[in-house]
Length: 287
Image 1 (spheres, helix red, strand yellow):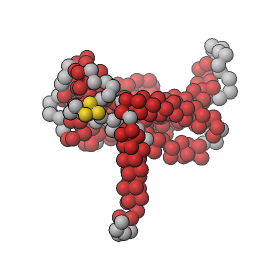
Image 2: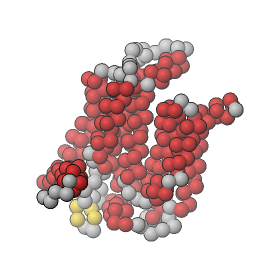
Image 3: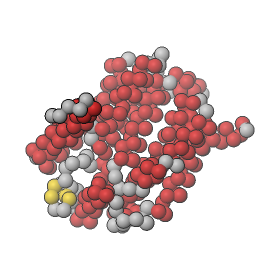
């Protein structure tokens, strides 16, 4: 039993996520493109890979600025490598899904202090109908989910004293000039910030909405929480840098229509029709 637990702890998450990847890989190209979103992203990625329409992205000959570039670039690169097929444009989603399962296992095992807990959580997710569906469609949702779980994993390590005790014990045999107090914690926070920044480049501000509640919860529940200044500096700087580069680049390429879409339709309109609008609908108020 101890050998099984040791094996699961060392290789379980990797083997499970790899098996999921190999199991679904032959089915990526079995179906035609499904739904409007998948057709749009595939069209834009194909135009970039085949026609060189990288800046600006084009959809049916018109500039496409409704999504950040990272997800579409990954799909276009997959097309360049594997050809213009449904399987190629869907491959980034499947790879992201495999990463989501890996991080789900690790998170559940850390929260539950048990590798079987990780296996159970990852197994339930892998058997979910909608998870399997979104693993096989060329949308941005699975890539965003990977970025969110990546940030949560690094935040958990940053706020988990057991992680730092284990890391310190492993480092006692090799002295280093960067093993000062809080270095590991700060490194985890910085990596969490890089995950959030990647999420911004996949699906805009949605990456921030799901990370902030997790950050507040970790900060309130953990005894050895880092200072807010340290947290916000290392977690926020990558996101601010990405936002500055993304908005500057898209502003130069697409001009005023991009800012009207991103700050107006994509932010204000979604907030009003989403959170605020839901409150009015639940109260049966017409507006």
